[in-house]
Length: 186
Image (cartoon, rainbow, N blue to C red; front, side, top):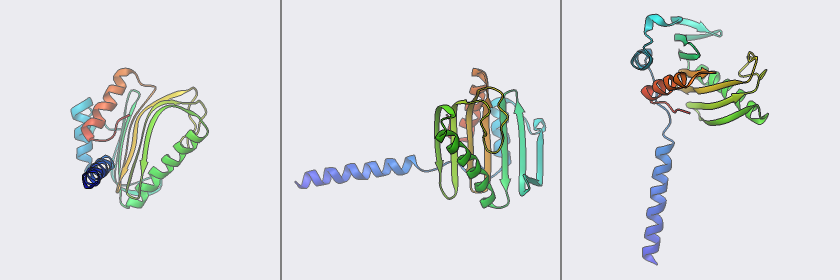
């Protein structure tokens, strides 16, 4: 009986360790230079190629320390470092809640993984959003739209790396950037 209890305890400890390791969260990308390095190393986008590249500005009326964004064909890459972590989380929560509504209304067909807690979260998706569906305050889809990539928040940093109706090569670029940043992939 004692051997069985020891075996049970060992299995429970092992399961708990695996559970904690799997929930360790996402990488905090404190510096925009890390974001730029990932873009340069994987898809050849350099700092000078960014469409928006601003320090100490506002984004949707909120003060941010750093904002950078660019598009590469069907792919979008965005990094925002907020002054206040609550603002970053609010931005992500709006995206998260919008996606939850879409799932509840059965307007998304595909795979997705989501996680949110007090300090961090992510949404990774690979699937079709029905036309005319509102996603985080915007309705701009004239036809069914395929999303591939993710939305991430950790502390005061919010990141978007995704493709809309992208080709296989576009999706490979998204995967490469996310792998370089060590963020969850679809």
